[in-house]
Length: 363
Image (cartoon, rainbow, N blue to C red):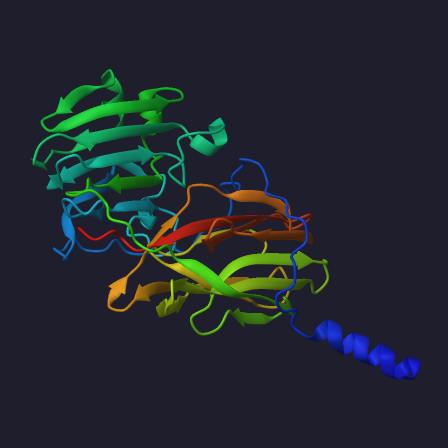
């Protein structure tokens, strides 16, 4: 083979997608979180409170001007966990992030566990930046718990393991500073209802046919493909950087998981932004307008087995920081990508969120 032909072959080979290749050594990062200055999706109007199948009641969040948002609480006995991150895409409380003054609990089932926190990911362990100013853990003790308006400083007037309202137990709490510092700070609420029966074994969701796909990020529009989800990402270079995405097919044994209702996010500033997929969805693609100064957008989708929607629970940890110009990351332990954050015009840092995908155990 002539030298010129050999060089052309090598260059063409570099341009082709790299399939099923081994990723480079990963930086799993520390316990830091992306800076709070990062842009998040545009706040959406609060959804109206309406009875829905599988919903027992609501947590109402209000600000000092009585603007409200409503968070559904799963039905009694379901054993479901819902993590409502106010900065996540599509959050009904996105307009009240760091603005809330009060909560109301309406028709909450017995033994419902509630976490109210300043942490954007509902994290209760780690350094002060990760955990935030406060968190409060509560549990209902009546068959149905209904409260009046409770201002957030109220929770810090009591010792733990005390009934502070009829049917409402203060389990634990954490506070940095004064109780009034809880005002204009609430960013995340987690709700878990108890199970009516012992859980039965269900086959786990795994990911097969793993492939790394390579492209130039400049002005790119990438999707993993039909019924394929994003599991990892690598990036190298600063001028029109090369990126590789790890994609796989979610399976439950021999049954293929079907992705439905794929939606693209609004545009976010490419250099500095924080994005988490909407509740109960996982990441399937990413777009970039021009270079790193252009807008970024993300694709997320629901996961289904037959006529049952699978649960997607985003983990409470940001993995990073990674140096954007030279890093590799992949979600582990059968988890899938559900969020990405970038910060800094120079020496940009990148963080990732992963999520568990699972079928709810039948009653």
